[in-house]
Image 1 (cartoon, one colour):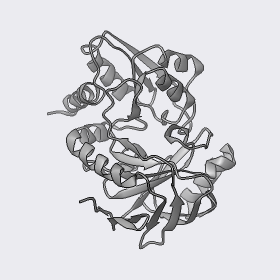
Image 2 (cartoon, helix red, strand yellow):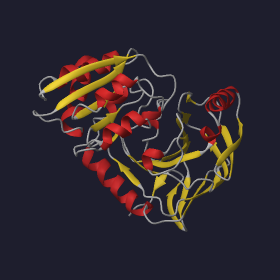
Image 3 (cartoon, helix red, strand yellow):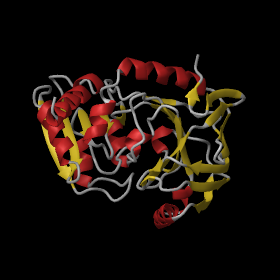
Image 4 (cartoon, one colour):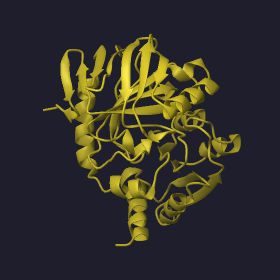
Length: 321
């Protein structure tokens, strides 16, 4: 099978198996000039599966969470389904949230590559769903999450009253939204209730794979000190441009996709089984209170994770049975 055939098969699977696109629905494929190949593959595949398909291409956004043009945001509200392979993430935008409120089903694919799309969508959805559901059940109704690593991470997050959210990539019901491909469980830690040190050693959104670890010291829910070389300096500069709440802890998540690999593409990286991620910035979409136009995830490998006093992960191995 050649590369083009593999991409076509992955596009078909994304639309049929994950989005559940039906013949009576209208679809918008929303992409940008950096993601034309994948956008076109999804559009071409969609023509045989739905009543009407619309292809919309925009200029790439500069950062994750930046809003699309107003005209496109309005168009998103007028269809049944949106699938969005874009250079930067639209997941944490008002455009996505407002369309979801109206019942639009939305699959976001920020930074997706052809290789990641083919690899991750080859996973058995049932296996990802099983792992995700088991982990989600453990993450519900807990008060404290603690993460420790041999590289120096030791952070505590208060999460009491915050619901864990399952993201399997299967989006077949009215108003559902999430990443495709996916495989994670995540929540919004309580604002101003995260303290400790996190050594990010995998990748970071907008930076890719890390040349050296980025160490962040969190005090009362905010990143107060960021160190770790040139990439850390770039991250700090990006956050400063946006504002104080860009430094706020917005998300904690655990990957559940056994096919995902650490590649530098955060869409795939944060789904890698045996890793955790902590994001800075916007978390309105997950029940938090941080409203700002940025959301950046950082990855930690081989963590030890406690939910309250229960050991959930040991050096990257989930303990669910």
